[in-house]
Image 1 (cartoon, rainbow, N blue to C red):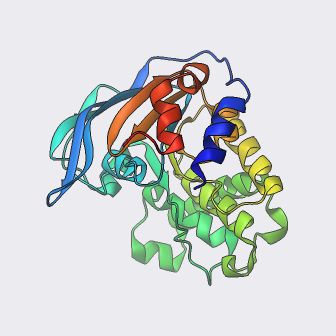
Image 2: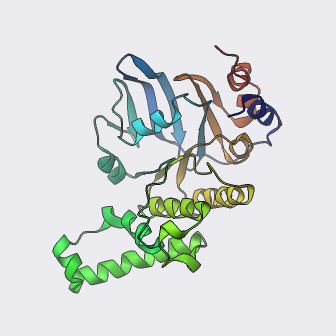
Image 3: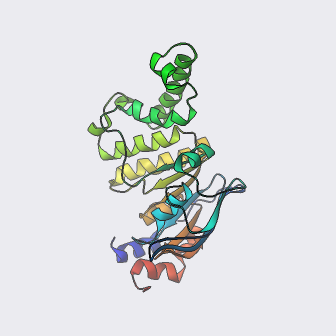
Length: 276
């Protein structure tokens, strides 16, 4: 990351959206995470309100992805608590967290490159499938009807993401920006209450970023899904986020509305690379 460029964009970014926010849906309190003697996160606290877009930003190595990994059960923090809809959860695996209603996309795509767009997004329905494997394989009776219902939901997601023309195309043959859309679609297929997006626009060109911004806003507005995202593009963050939390070297140095964060001297210094 070019720190000087990012700091300039932080100053020049447009005003964030002003939207009605609901009650706290996700509460992160005093989270600390270490690998051996290396501290990845130190006493991090913030909350996420229902129906908002909450951004987590910071320079490379700030602990942003580690924070998401703690929320969705990939990592188990040594200290602190995470509460979702009033229920505190500890030592839960990713599948259990997903069953609670928290879905995740990753910075590095983990799609099934040889499978079609439709089949990749269908994998996001696994948590919703009630038929056993034998009935699924035979596709008879209730199992067949259930599969039809799931495919109808997936087709609606494909239409929503405007990827109808590639629904039967192997994902590995698609441009990177479209693969990112498929990854988003797979997460949406889980029907999450909270959607965690790890750098959803990394590696995209300007047009692809504009499309992804539009889809994230539409997911938030039309589906009512709460969004927590990590993103390096400060123009994007300041434009679509309701609130922003800033991490630097595993510590929280800012938290608030986009305008407040942009005016925070510690945040500007972190992006200039002069904090340490």
